[in-house]
Length: 209
Image (cartoon, rainbow, N blue to C red):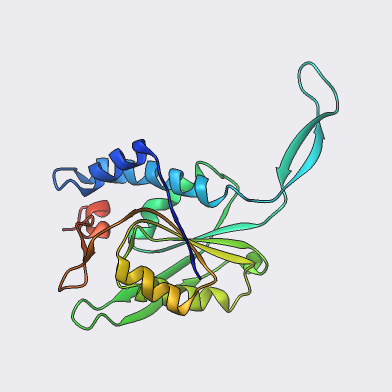
């Protein structure tokens, strides 16, 4: 069974409400999306492996410290996933970033991959897939299919909002992944958009609506 981690925090609820608001302009939307992405990444990395090291502090030599002991790679899905990158890298500056470009036809709901650039070090790494919205699930499923070919140790999907239909579909295909999500919304509408949702996150990030 797929692990669904619904992040609970009142500040996160407030920020997601601002993202939903049609009156929120593109700059504010981008800034808030980065903040929300940091919340999600913090939760997704709570079990990351670390190792003890020795460090010198201003008052003590050979004090116990910690360093990361696990490779982590983020993979934003074009376009909207790009809006989440800075929020994650602000928490984890040394992280490596792959990219997947995948397009969903609004008329047929079919997807096609048009860009794929993943780091060579993805084998054995913990991968965080970034997409603000898990709607039908098709885009994220196809992206995970591609990522799994490179042999990561684990995959977590970070989404701001998700539809129950998309969660169910993702679980049916990839029950071994984790979903870290800010809100589980009501449903998909007749056009395959999440309701109440955020609208078209890519358009709202880049001001192209």
